[in-house]
Length: 141
View (cartoon, rainbow, N blue to C red):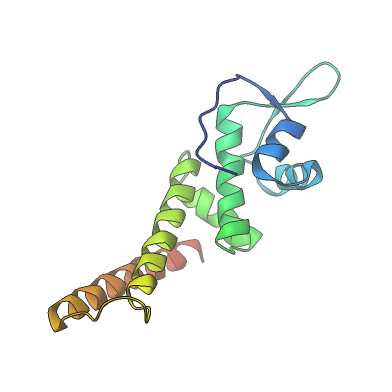
């Protein structure tokens, strides 16, 4: 399920949002209770209607909890520290994970041997990513 799919409609039902993320509607209702940033409107019949901002926040929670392995408390702190930038939190976490994945692929046995300079550059980049991750971790604690 592509998480960066453009949003066309103005409002989506809880079933549609759950389908976008591949989760149950009950999980979205639970996240509404756990994350005060998720506030879908309700219609006269009490049905939840998610707008684009709500969906971005839900996507951020999904990325942090399901893809990055954050605890609910950790995800809550990450969203709170980046107030109003829920999508940026998810993008940042995904980018760091991809950078780590690419760096790990570069050291696989199928890759060509690196020169000493290239190896040092990879090590430098990994140390930089590690430092950034440790900084983020310290921010959410």
